[in-house]
Amino acid sequence: MTKPTSAPAPASASAAPRFDLPEPDAFTAPYWSAAAEGRLLIRRCGACGRPHHYPREFCPHCWSEDVTWEQSSGRATLYTWSVVHRNDLPPFGERVPYVAAVVDLAEGPRLMTEVVECPADDLRIGMELGVTFRELTPDVSVPVFRPDRS
View 1 (cartoon, helix red, strand yellow):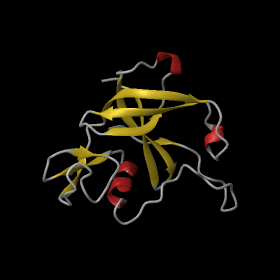
View 2: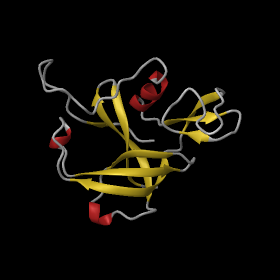
View 3: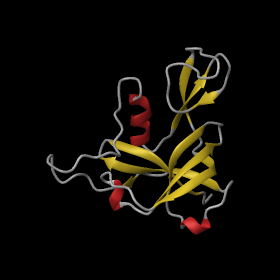
View 4: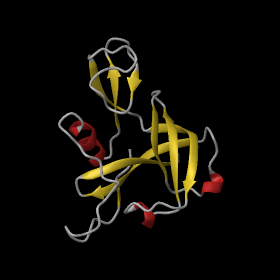
């Protein structure tokens, strides 16, 4: 995994609302804590053995509640993408254009994310990607992906 990258925090409490901040709760706290440390977690079912993402308290495949956290390798392939040229929600308007994407994690789950550090013209279905993290606040980072450089 790679060290989180930084993004500016709001200047004050009166700053515009942010629509890129997740709302962690007691259940998802391990996921967000790991992300802040530069680690991507997924869930794996102890009954059927299948991994899944986004974090849920039950397996979406067999409905078992025997699910645990597991660290992902961070490797993925690009499934599809779209270049966003306009987004009026703060702070996305400051980031346009950006690449909204869906990736297939090496472990199997499909994840919505963003591809960074790659010109849109260089993107190809099936290209290998690796996870990195965008720091949104000192306590919150989100997984994004970039071309795999290993």
